[in-house]
Length: 202
View 1 (cartoon, rainbow, N blue to C red):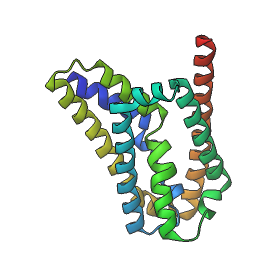
View 2: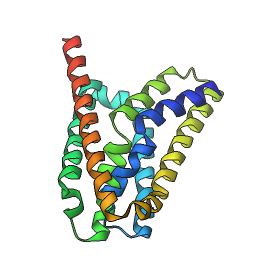
View 3: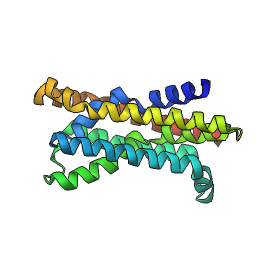
View 4: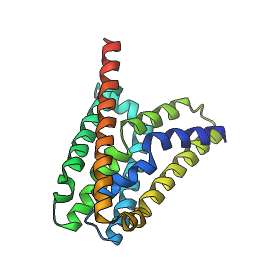
């Protein structure tokens, strides 16, 4: 039970379901309620798939390609910074008038990854897998904690339409700009942490 709580709290803080809502609203501002639900489902499946893949094979992949964890963190920070700039300038709402193609692209990138399945969540999942001693109970606890985080993220995005109706168009735009600013700060912090790690390793 302790491991379930630890996994859930750690990934909850990193993936930040409440903070995902305004970004999700900004990325899906031109979507219908049905398209927004579909985007939420797709994003969760993509994020879960990416995190599970890295949890199982991430260290082997990074070692094979001679990529360090700080390098992965820095690249994720750069991607998030690009998304933040689009949110701040309103380019995300203008990027593609075709709702169907936009739905696919936004759900996969940047929503599924790197926003949900970002460097922090990937690295945390890899570290949790390394800590498991092979016992069935630990693996079950790890799976339950991860599933609960995914469920929380889905619920946050699933009811984003209700928040959208409450805020209205102007309120959603305001929240989107604020989310872009905060996301830019997170991206810069990710890159700063990566640079610090590079310097310490040198």
